[in-house]
Image 1 (cartoon, rainbow, N blue to C red):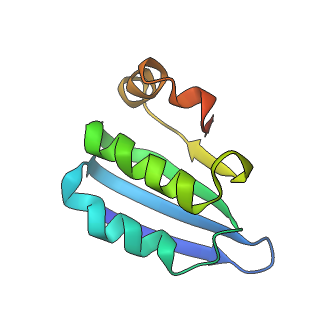
Image 2: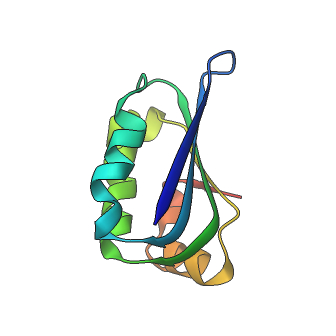
Length: 100
């Protein structure tokens, strides 16, 4: 798993790019990636290179959602492959997050 972040101060957007398996082994790195910025910013997750997600990844997304303010937070999951998107939709995460 590789995780990279980029923060755009002008747009107030944090982009987190995740590569490989998005599972429990990512927990600390994922939390560290977003907890260093203001919770009122927009969060974009680039899922282009994610090969696998499990239930702990879904839990981590929910923790990010809570950090971002729940329903008021703005979190976008970009470029999910078909398998990842299917899991997100089965879990009804398309109701909690914007999938693009």
